[in-house]
Image (tube, rainbow, N blue to C red; front, side, top):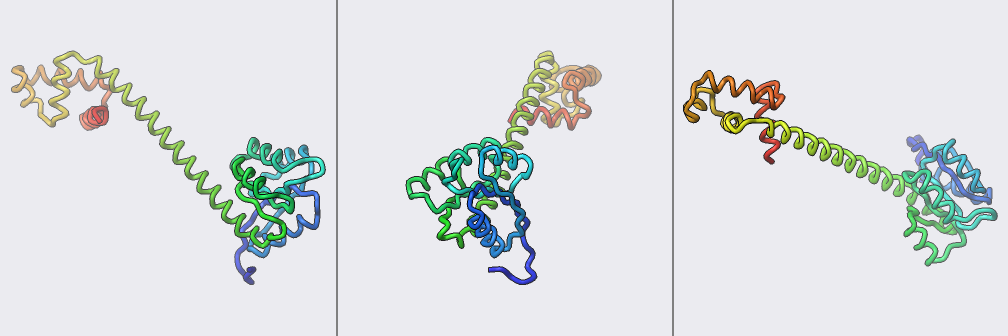
Length: 223
């Protein structure tokens, strides 16, 4: 229901439809659902390809049967070119088996023209699902990036650890435990000055700017 003075949601609608009356009906239903629509209508494959790039729609509404084109081909083309854009069938000629097939092939929904009042809610739900899917993919991408970064970091620390002599590794382990140079010297039976030399070499080989950086790198590597 349209509410006077309510803020309308902008929506770029690409209609794959050969009947101007049906196209107007779809836009009318979206307007009633508080969408502020700008629209393009296409009939042929070439027109669809052109408008997918030029118009950059938010939603695609397609008839199932067209004189020079068919809905499933339109769906396949749109998924290849703009997989992030929801695709809804709005048709008067689609049986239950065909409707299920469209969903299996990636359509967001199917609406019968005789029940076009469902269109507004279906479009709103499809847009939300697309937004949620985009957020999920972004999160997955971030996780993959962080995983690759952590793996790279782990490999780098492993390579640096391999540079250490056995004595330097002993000094490193005691530094990570929080031991001071004097205590390390006592535990290893050597002088504090010698430990300071080992400690400096450990810092250099591990490419650590500070003791805190060194400890953090080693602890993260051990996880």
